[in-house]
Length: 71
Image (cartoon, rainbow, N blue to C red):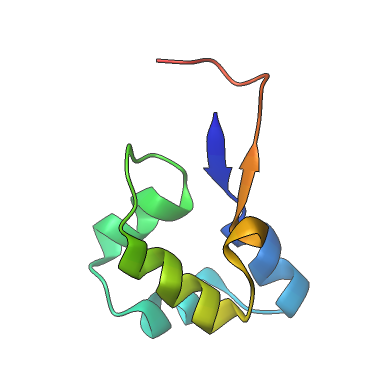
């Protein structure tokens, strides 16, 4: 399973979820699902926005967790 590492990146940078939510400019429900890895897809525009805001590369945003259950 591939998952976003946004919470880890926020902690590393000393930022909060609320700060990121305000930067993203998306609906809170969509943002919350994305951050909690409770979504089946993510738009390229959201990946790009996260990379720009968090000053990271896409490979830093994601990790593969082979131990996670699959749908």
